[in-house]
Image 1 (tube, rainbow, N blue to C red):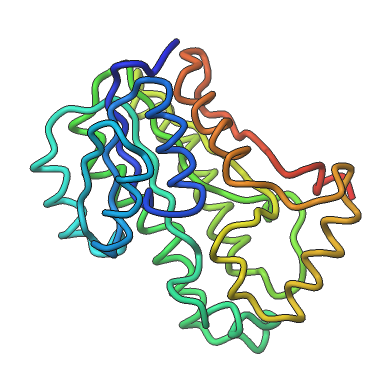
Image 2 (image 1 turned 180 degrees about the horizontal axis):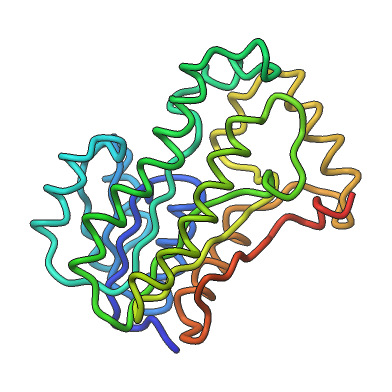
Length: 244
């Protein structure tokens, strides 16, 4: 039940939760492979992670790029694809109520949150060891949503449903989901002022009275990788948000 010596692939591992997970995995003796769009950020992340971190530049929403990366990667043990719902810092400003949201915005969110993970599994699973695991990224939204998050909620719900099917189809590879609440990451600095104020009100109403950290989610990611009896699980780490 230890990841020491195992090979872990984290697409989206150059910042935020992905980087925190890569650091924590390396600290436990795992061999880490990270993927991301920016060569510069990958280099910076690799220096922070240390050890012998392997990096790959790719767009996780490009299936051909994902397939090519895994074909040249060789065998590995665990996989996580941690791509944000929003492709850039301006996307959150276009999240409005359902009847006024452009259909294209739903497509954007699904391409980033759902399809990127599907591509990773589809092309990564054939190269995984049978004792390995996949950890998918959902959110608290399927259990407690807020206005204007219909696209994110739908994409997260789709990921959780996919995980239940894949836990059967890909067995003995284990498939689990982590569902973070509101987490303070570099990306949260780009959300509109009004929405950030709403986040702060939500955080204050939670039992823990604050936003979460990437490191707290990383600990949950590694728990799901190391616990060999966990599959088809959804691990909520949300500060009690769903209770408010």
